[in-house]
Length: 279
Image (cartoon, rainbow, N blue to C red; front, side, top):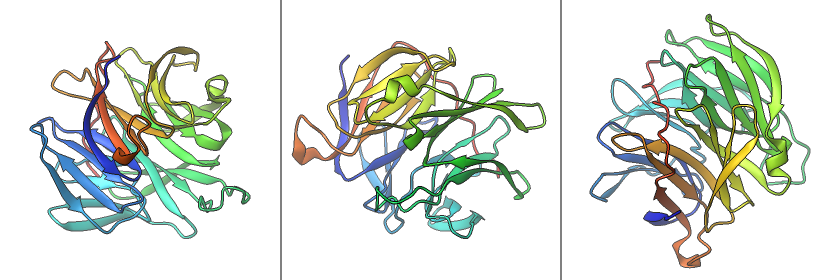
């Protein structure tokens, strides 16, 4: 599959998200920046001093919700605090649910010391009225989050357990029937960011696997997209018809000088719509 390079020269690219005008928002988690790439290729720095932004969600009133040390709504240079918790090293990937609430995973472990004992974190939901629900605990290292097309299943990558924590969602938003899927695909390396296509299949970035792997809703491996990077960190659908897949990395094996790179390709299926945040 042909991969088109849209941008490069970053450290750890994360959080790709595409708006209705085909602008691509993304972060450099280690560089502490958030960017917007217009459809003509112009790249603008929106935030320049916030480390570890692993997830973005566009907001109905403009701007976006971002993770990092806290969860905040950023618009036109100003930020509004939505969630903070004592003991959290960082909030990582996040996603909107069917009605525009934010679901986000928390990391309590110090990832600068990979040999240290892992401290499991939680998954939280920021409700429309600003209240916070803890959905579940025991997420070892939180990463990508996604929903099935009908929003009745929540997928949550837990990197160091090498799979996805999966829950059914009731009509009132409660989660149940926890299970762990996809472990067979990540014997080497770890799963990272993810997205979901309109058929309900899961596309998961594979750090150490040099690919994005396509899984069924039950976690069975169906296909893959090879990517010239050791650390393939996340992916997201976008474009006018949602048939573009954006893949982001922390390196580029074809040219080491390029560093973290943003690729775009056509996987032959459309992605699900990502709802605007309304919190």
